[in-house]
Image (tube, rainbow, N blue to C red; front, side, top):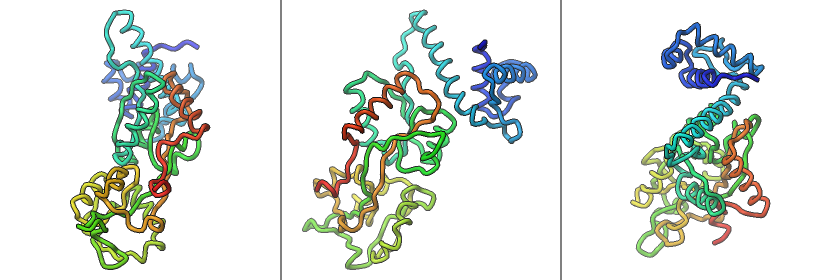
Length: 307
């Protein structure tokens, strides 16, 4: 196979801009020449990479997988040239992980700590809204997505590892006696609501029939779990928060779980990847986690089950 590295760079620019003329301009070549490069690349790999019937143009399924391959090839080549030229590279080829705010701390930090105990790896982290994180993985802009259960990623061309379990718990600030300041089983209480498009709102909606006994009225709305946690700690109302975010607050009594044996919404923590081949370090991470899971390791276990 004869591949011109310029074709790879042209392809990556087109994948980013989704527009032939803008990509050609960014690459400082004419549009006809740019188009010939893309066609030559498609001929070399034996697949159509660009769907020219859409507006803007988009990547075919083969194109999405090849984007990861092209990024890796260009990145490795650039790194090799830098090494030859003696140019220092503080963060060589970091493993790229996208994750929502709700899992960025402490779950992601615990995950990177666990991995780096055995492997000297570098990470580049993007904290994104879930739909943007999914797009980032779909477009091969990251190696992995750390998230909850995402139905669109639980099927080909994606793979996943279930690395932990937990519960969304209904929590309140304690009163002076250490009991819940707000108890929706006894009186009508303010609650912090999630935005309708968020994963948390969809999860809560699944359990709606079981939650009808709770007497609540909404006083605040946001898609961010961290903001709900901060508001709950200020006594602004009840909040559904994943236990991985509030273990210390629950253990110290800064937050009180409302009847956790009954009011808990299970979730799974999964690491997702595209089916395209991973770079060496990313594959090492995937293999290490796969082996650890087989031996019983989890990044998180439900707080209620161990308390």
